Image (cartoon, rainbow, N blue to C red; front, side, top):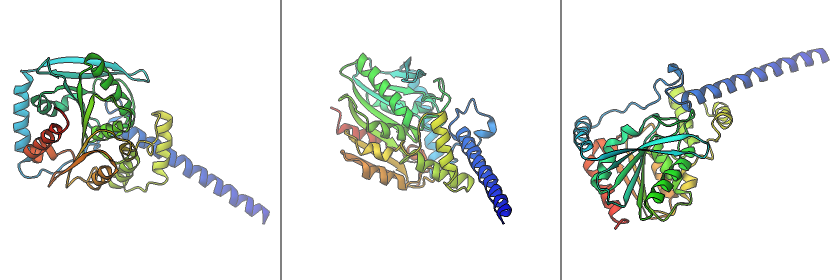
Length: 324
């Protein structure tokens, strides 16, 4: 009997070890798939990460017209390359678009997951037309910026504080607006919970998520049909080891509870990538003056394409309340 018990215990121990090793392998794979910079990871690890949006109404025609206007605008502004060094020693790069050198208004425009600063040129144009000098950074592990691991907004919030400091050091009279889409939206929401200089007057987020944990939980089910346990738990451990942060601490909701500046929240009603329900959670968490805009029929990061007139008119009206 004792011999059988020992054999059973040995079998269970081997099975437990195998399951543990397998879950950690899967967790490590998920880090490679989701967080290792796209231009360094194996191709198979990054296929299909970007959402595929269904078009709605005149979306494609709107995008084409916006791009035409942006191409014309680019000939009217001065482009300047900018750099900062992050707290962990990464060189981060940005482009600055200046139409009026005398302006004290600045918009920091933050791109989304696996995107880059050039992808934000249309957004930069709209802020420029409102009188802002626009800075579009490449987030860490994106574009021309250094870094191997995507910060999902949490590491990026500290980087954004440094971009803000650079603007204020160069122009103490600066009036700054933060704007971000998708992961950029999460970045500016997470930044809202930090101690900000009085120069920051308003923050606008478009389709950002409530937390990195909830975002990955949703994607684990949506993309792989996998449960959050044990895969998300082991991925979180490996992210802590490799990238230096944990999913649950990276919470836009918790950061927004500490917000001190006016906030605008935008989301598409048909967003399944970052579910539309998340915008109501972040909106409710914010204690400051705030506005909510849900664009009917828009999928993820497509609100400005579905109804550019409503989108940008609403932003202009919101900013008009808080900037002289």
